[in-house]
Image 1 (cartoon, rainbow, N blue to C red):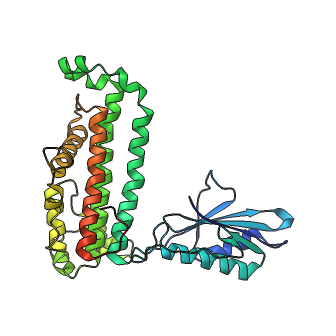
Image 2: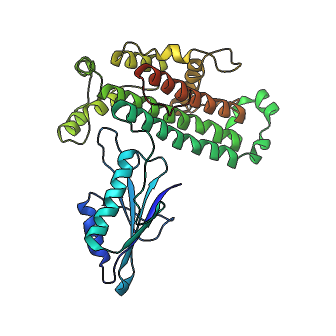
Image 3: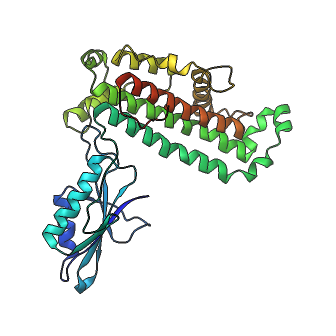
Length: 329
């Protein structure tokens, strides 16, 4: 899903000239995609979290007949993505001529009627988007192994748990644990970076930070933001530590309070299930120990836990900072 525009450039237009013009506009040539034909270019700008996914452009040579170009932004685009998409269409049309037709109509630029998110709000909204895109892969993998789940001999595993490594579906489920942890880890880190970047308390956080020499060099050379370097020096695989990090940025953020509430009929809070998942990940990564009881229903319960964790965290931040709607309550 997305918004597309097709530009039919005049006869004699060189596709190489179009390539160079896109580079002037800040686009970079990328590897081709299987979905659209042509030489692929993309634009993205790391500017106060304004750009969410950027703009894609495909240039196709038509030989002596000229060239054509296809541009696209996703349906999840930000206002800044949308604005730069329209700027690209306008600039290419003014430079080379021709006709363009967007999803809004012939000669029409692409409208935007979504929310305009800035600074920390945009960063957190983007973190949620990254999480949703990542967690889909776990569901796809589970569905692909749906039929093979019947191969697991649960009675045998209960009697001889050492056979966990001999059950292919169970191996897949155990290997998913580190991936699930990486999904929520990236979310918590990304939200932290967004909050820290615009926090009036960040000077105190910087004073206590212990950055590696490599990260300090990267900051010095403009390859890494200070806030990202600080986040890299922290662990986001411990719920209590994460809550402390957030409280340092804003004392009114009570992440543990948010996560300690049980979900549905669960007896314990989300924080306990997160800790169990992280512990499962550590056992596999550091001791090569697989859980003989980590069946598909447990994996799905962990995925729901992560989704609810993201939902609760963002809903709480939205109410606290009076951000715009758009997060599920």
